[in-house]
Image (tube, rainbow, N blue to C red):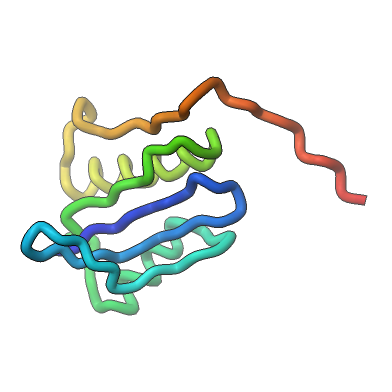
Length: 111
């Protein structure tokens, strides 16, 4: 069985990891890290490891705390995958733990 972990707590550094699950242990098989496109990275990991979305039992995201936008992004991607591919009911989808109110700031202008 396989799972995919999305860690998007940090704004510029995201991790997408493909995990093999056996005997209730999760072992990282492959991962991509950096300022990456999460959905494209999931596709690359599946293709590289000759897997199809149906081979993945669950996609889950790090619940936080962390970047408000990053946590929301990771949870949304995981929830859409689990709902669309695994037919998980909306009532069972996971939500981030923000750890406080969002601190949204306008990025500085580049010069």
